[in-house]
Length: 230
Ligand SMILES: [Zn+2]
Image 1 (tube, rainbow, N blue to C red):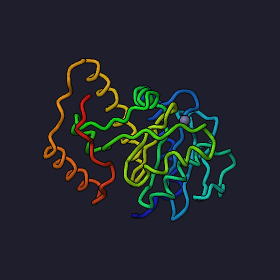
Image 2: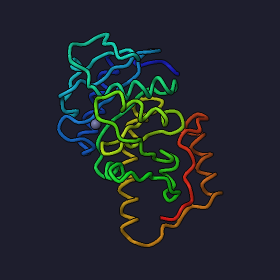
Image 3: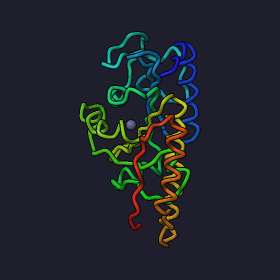
Image 4: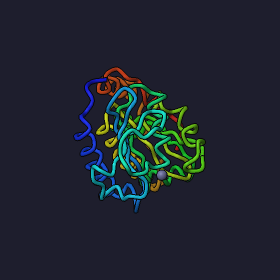
């Protein structure tokens, strides 16, 4: 890990990302949560019951990786447990975003993984998009459901719920959420054409995986899209 942002900068960035997530329609009403790591075992997190589009820095809560509140007077979201699990499973993570992006969440509802090698940029930005098994929001079952994906993938869909992305920093986690919804829209449009998708070849995918590894400082996270029929 590089240097962490100051508390002030971290809180400002979370509010900025909250506005972007809200403005792009990746959440509605008070949906979604965001965390940003600022120490070996500390994050700033978004509170419960507030629109992500209208947050101010004093609403945010500092927590340790065990879920204890260290600073702040607002109540953290119960979904923060899922974010903390990502940090506990993958020490390279510096930021996480949870949202309910409409098209990607449609895949979460059908339980269909987005795992075909059909879109070059998505292989570099995300890789395979798995679907974590359903868990009742707010319960311990939610962090348990995402745990298997935290190390080897860059995101996951939450069955019948939404999406979770993570990255080396919060900007990367946010861009992955943007890219996930964009990719899901394109994938759904392609499926709607009712013609077979043109799969990239294994060697074309290998070239993209090499690029992905390079832009992610050697990380192989994201897995390899498979060449199955649509
Ligand atoms: Zn949610």
